[in-house]
Every structure is written in structure tokens, then in C-alpha cells.
Length: 179
Image 1 (spheres, rainbow, N blue to C red):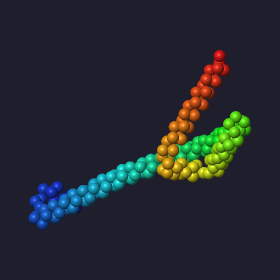
Image 2: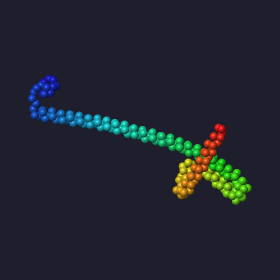
Image 3: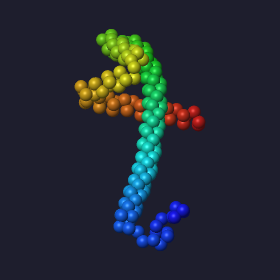
């Protein structure tokens, strides 16, 4: 028996002890194979799980970046709108002040004083719009709507009417320029 072949290879019958040992060895090899296979499956599953988690995290990161960019853009637009609104309110205040003199002449000093008070109020609103942060303005608007929803709806309707008239007048002016 100089070579390393098993008893089975030599055609020699195995003893019960040898047979039991070989069955135990085969069982151990089978268990080891299943363990290695399970470990490989777990590693593959874990690797796939890690890839999925990495992909989810990348999506969250990108969504956060896009959300931040959108927020920055909205804040920039809101700041521009804030500046424009302040300018428009300043113009309205000047128009009311200029009109107050005419109102004095046509309707009386009492009504002219109303126009001046309105101009002062509009100027104060303009100052508030310019000096407050966008978030503060939004919170003020929310608070106003909560306290006086009917007034807020009426103001929104009036502003919409005025804007529609202004847009309509602008369109009519453009048509007149072309003719």
C-alpha cells in the first residue's frame, strides 16, 4: 500500500468502522460545502444588500442636493420678488401722495388726508417688505390669513383684479404701438 489510494480504489472490502468513518467524512464534507455555499450566498446577498443601500444613499444624497438647489433658486426668486414688490409699493405710495393734492382741491382736505395716510401706510408696508427676511414675510402672511381669512380672500381678489387690469392695459399699449 505504498500509494495513497483509498481501500475502495483497491477493491478491498471496507470494514464497518472504515465505512462509518467514510460516511462521517462525507457528511462533514457535505456540511462544510453547505456552510461555504451558505456563506458565499450570504456574502452575495450582503454584497447585493450593500449595493442596494449604497444606491439608496446615493439617491438620498442627490435628492438632498436637488432639494437644496431648488430651495436656493426659490429663495433667489423670492428675493427678486421682494425687491420688485418693494419698488411697486414705493411707486404706489408716491402716486397716492401726488394724488392727495388733487383730492384736496376736488373733494376737500379731509379726503386728501386719507390719501396721505394711505400713502404713509403703503410706504410702511414697502419698508417692511424690504427689511424682512422672506421667511418672516411668509410667516406674517400665514398669520394674517389665519386671523382674517375673509380679508385675505378679498385682498387676493382685489390684487388679482388690479393685476388683470394692468396686464390688459399693457397688452393694449403694445397693440397700439404696433399700429
